[in-house]
Image 1 (cartoon, helix red, strand yellow):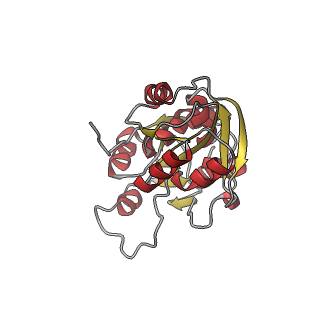
Image 2: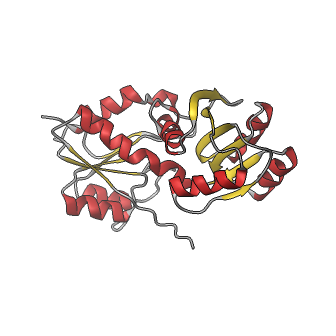
Length: 248
């Protein structure tokens, strides 16, 4: 019998909690480690829609990227996500920045989705492990089109010199522009970029692409399901898309 704890232990072996950033809160965050795992929902976020879907699909475990509990909770009331999880007997495992930086984690999946070559780890000044790779598309405008095609969503960018070497950070990575400039990269591909950071990139002659937080991270969900299925072939792992921020 496979228990929730077996899945959690496997994920912790692949993506150790001690590799997460100090501010982070990954782990087994809600529920019972010792109950039998049956069907598992795998998603970026545990919102009420994910809880409702897990209940409807008969899943008693949800695996998320973003921690379902991040800041300290002062109340747990009916209708809140944590209350509904407990009420319905659904546990949650969250793997966040440890999954970002790990082998076959979010950054690696993003590089693969973007068809970058010669992908390697690049350690930023703060110690966070990004990825670097070589782009076949040297023109910034055409690379922006390619990013949009591969990831979906909206791509905001400033165009600099012709691109060969790119630095990649899934999720919020605008703060790594200084690392990209110092490292001699032609482009930084990330999301959640502030206006002034675009200006800094423009002045430095480097291309900076903001491909959206959701779209730069959701690329990990299907590969994560595949990895879990290969390890626990008697368990059904169900990918769930809960993109709730809309754009036109």
